[in-house]
Amino acid sequence: MSDSWISILLGWPAILIAFLIAILGILRRKPLALIAPVILVLPIALYLFGAPKVSWLALLIPACFIGAGVAIKFRRYHIAWLCLIPNFSFFCWLAVMVLGQ
Image 1 (cartoon, rainbow, N blue to C red):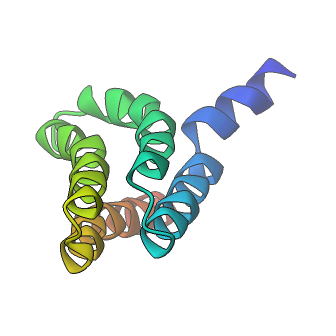
Image 2: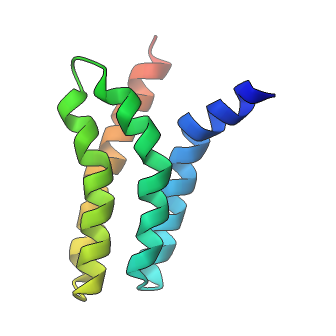
């Protein structure tokens, strides 16, 4: 039972839920809604921080969601969308690497 909660907390479901919440937060123009994706991806980012090749990229994952929330607060909605691109690209790259093993 505890393994399933760990996989949800640290796995692909958490990543997908984080992106859905972030997209809804941007569409509804609610900067506080971008805190939930930060909380959801923080364990993943901390886990990836231990990997030698992507440790510096792992720090950017929560920072991009925070940047999107700040952009919404200052009514720069196009910048908020641009802040999601690095995270989306990183997780797509990670998915290709995982599936390619």
